[in-house]
Image 1 (cartoon, rainbow, N blue to C red):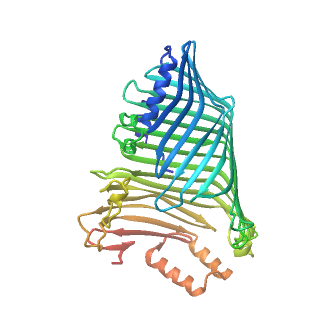
Image 2: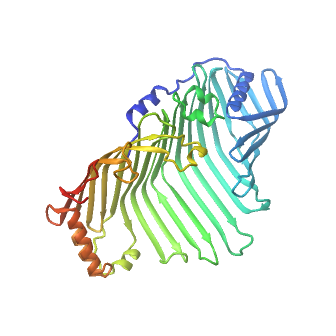
Image 3: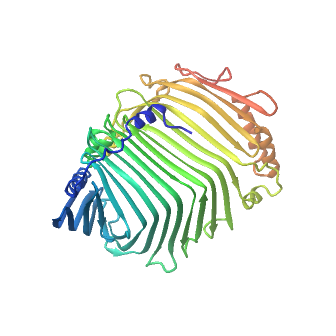
Length: 500
């Protein structure tokens, strides 16, 4: 898989925020910091009454509003109390409050949803200095549920319950030099239970249940532009570094769809562990994720099998790409891995009842990299709404290719550079220069077995062998190799024999 470049990781580690120096904080300082942070995020905060008694600040009817894409988020807390204690400030708030989200996109349905949060026992302690405040929080449990949901003005019959148990963590705001933040959140268990019904179609509905354990979320950022989080362009400023990581230690997911007309189905999965990571630095975004020991099951009338199941030792992906307009070629990459894929005997018995094919686990690995120049800002929809090419491809590398299935294995590597000044030789495409090397082991044996099973007609197998003979040469027992070369003058050759 693509791993984040050491230079990025080192720079992010160098910017990791230090623990705040000990200092006495007042309740008013903490509240002022909260308001400043909210303003930087584009929030509007109003307070019904604000009372200071013996250094203890009591806030009543605290209303928070924030514009979001195509709508607005609002929430009101009946009470927040900030009480100094030994140089720190203890923060407590209403154990129950509502949040309302209203979305009215131009080309989609309008949604008006009210959520209720219940946070018994939530405690937050602020420490440090005015320019470097750390907030530590704990909660035995937090619950969230839907109070009401309207779509295009009509009520939706939906239940949603989210339960978080064993919450602990901290977040740190550092404004001593520029602006920075850091947060770490640990959750013992997360449980999601959602059910929805279509009131216009009796018997139809959807149910989703998910449960994960030992969750950790880590986020950090550094950069002067982050002091104004309401400006999305700040995320891609040259001095900005953002890192985000998420891990869990196992979980399950089940989706049930009931449809009396099209047929019902159930999808279920379990995984032993998983992770997601994201980095934005120097106008480049890197995003990667993986799951270990996946078990997948699909069943129901909507599929042509009684039940289909599969296991996967590892599923992973990684993406690297520029997210700003660039003056010079920038790196990009894409990796996909499916390792140890095994499917149930039900499927094998349908396509290979005699057991002619090896049923070893399959593997797919594709690792691509290259360089491209972004001619427009990819975050600007108006800039992308044109027939002109958004960028120029300068290099493309196949760092690794491996496909192993049913006893055959295809591997490969290679790369090309592209001349963007020559769009004539290859009919509007920049002229490539390079080669790719491929190796196929067990290909002819697989063709023979497919013909034997009746899955592949003899004439089509013959055509496939002729094609392999054109592009590849024998190099061992049921082994073929191929070197495909392309030159800027338009010549294409396979194993030294010119094809064009």
